[in-house]
Length: 287
Image (cartoon, rainbow, N blue to C red; front, top):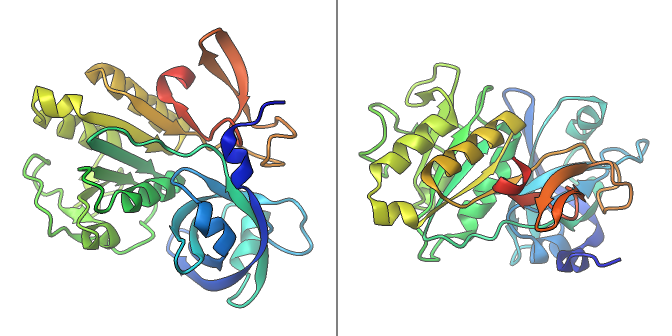
């Protein structure tokens, strides 16, 4: 069987919990000392981690940040079931078995990448944004959430005059990196667009001249309806789009095929595994 080249990047290591912080909406950010994973991680990839010694089934969680120099990775997750409830109880100094990085990463090619993350799909976009620091690209990050954001939004110091009036809130970390970001939600919050992430994305794209539009590409991770809307937006403007799918995974390494989705290939429809053939796909091939 021919495996994608990124299969060779997967490492297994016992990762010590360095920090574990709780946020509103049953959200948590956990920092793991996982130097082998951190050295090879790319935006869009994930890890498969144990949540408790008594529960052998691993959980896939997208990588939000990785420091190859310091050997840590950050994961953002939401407590939604028994497994993540057990994970939320793990404390600093304990160890988790960490398998990763796994999966096909984003390949950011355009000069003006538009990075769109919704809910649990925010981490890959934050990782992608960090990877673009100092690269010469001009990204815009749009993040959306229907629960409180896992950070305290603040007014951005980066002016975006083509955004709707009053939409000024940003993720502080991105602002500190000098990467423009705006937020959207269906919940009324100060400085945050009341609506969908695709509303802001369309507003931004419409503000660009033709040459700037042609330098743009869309990258997204989030719920399926959001991803489908992002792909439709890309079609509307004739732009390339990559999406990261979040499917239920059992093995995480391509053995069980439980996360398979239908993808349009050059030879017709085919079933591909999100964990190793993805999670990043050409948006036009899955929607």
